[in-house]
Image 1 (cartoon, helix red, strand yellow):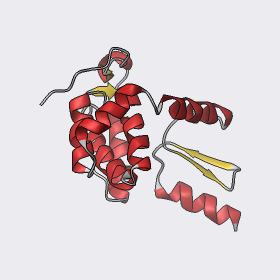
Image 2: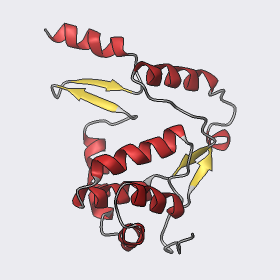
Image 3: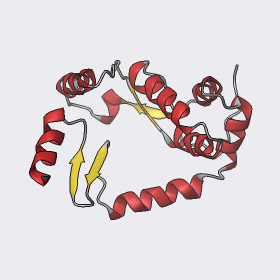
Length: 162
């Protein structure tokens, strides 16, 4: 099954090997997998750094449709565990259907741009709080934990706050 790509849709993504030329990402993946194992998340191999804008717009639609939690879990699994390309509309449609959304309606909404301003606003908010990486955890509007950190980092911060 294939869906027509809207003319303003950004490119699907770039190869990680191109984006991070000359860098060995094996230690990054080793740490990521270790952090995931601590919380029961399996991180698969990634070759492509997907453009997530389509997935983010679909997530906003899922939020408004009351299916956000299911969609979020399914899209996370598709990208991080299965290595699917979130810049591909067929992938978005399949995840939408799996999450209880109508695939064609989801793609129509993604392509008509109605959630673009919501994403742009979130981007501005990210800049205001100094977002430099994901995940980002802000505790008590004061402390930031950036990236896939060991559970001890969180425990140490919470202990300091007591």
